Length: 127
Image 1 (cartoon, rainbow, N blue to C red):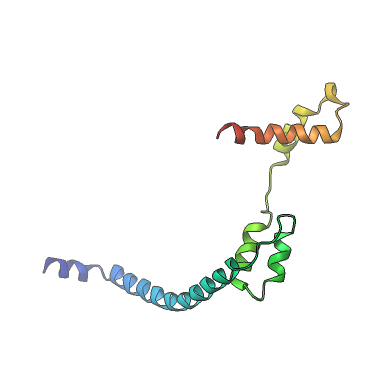
Image 2: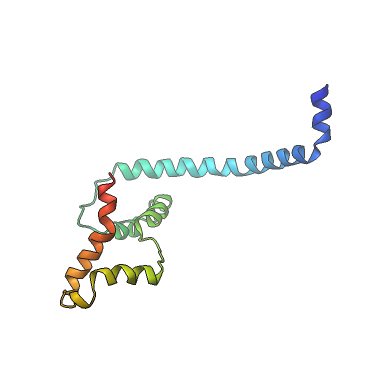
């Protein structure tokens, strides 16, 4: 009885629970159809012969987009290079430690390799 009184005292929570439940019901049914379609696409994809590692995976998914639309969408998302931004001061600061007045004869390819190692070596050492 006390619980019934407490429930009536909080009509906002009750309304929110009903609206959340309604939203969940509306969104659940169509997803089941998509999920079964996606599962079928995945089964079909796994039964295909793998492409050689030398081929472009994005080109492969572009050519298979009509057959595997859901998988192609996911592949485009995860196989494409992510957009990124960096502070120019930080970028040029790292380069200034490699290239300065005393290292002005360093070739561009060597400087690029040194910068790559400087930025990525900690990732390998932390494993």
